[in-house]
Image (cartoon, rainbow, N blue to C red; front, top):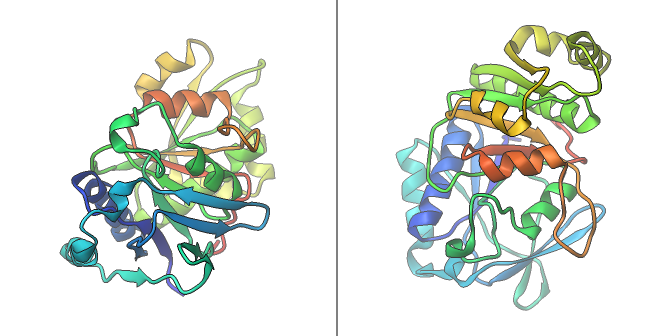
Length: 277
């Protein structure tokens, strides 16, 4: 089966920018876009450990009569043949069930709030829950389309960071792009300590094959060191979540990254599995 990216299409100018980002990712990765043009403002995603109800804002129903046509035109302009997902199963008459067996999913920073209310430093609670529960990683787009020409993995030595490195190597393998690591050294650790984690995680060969730069910071404020990350790099992060009812909080460094960096983000949650490794 082809690698697939799932995208909820919004037939608006901002929705077009998000979809262009998905198409760019698909073209680089050799993936197929699967487009969902919603007919209702709610849907369910049944994950193994959670059921996520997504409540879309009304802009996702804008000009529904031309939405599929516009999505197809944009994809074809990029040389891609999009699949169009049609909901067949419904938990309720206006509550379709969306499958969760895709390889990637694209989300704006929020899929449940009007774009005018969303700032750079806010990832909506439903997006957070998807990240926490999904086996697939989530592409979180910048507000407007921007190309990325390298990959930067944030690596702090945790299990979530290993997930991010595994995902970054996967993207580098497919795209042929430069892969760099970013590490804010903590607790008196050395480069050898981080390299040991990489080797013990079975990623030593990927490290040798794809990583050609490592930004190691032994001091300075994390927020200031982020300036060294190129603006045209895809940022790859591993995330974990706390809490179920209120907005999920990720690790403090990821919260900082997503609040100050305008780059596109690719986030692997704690359940991420590379099914094609």
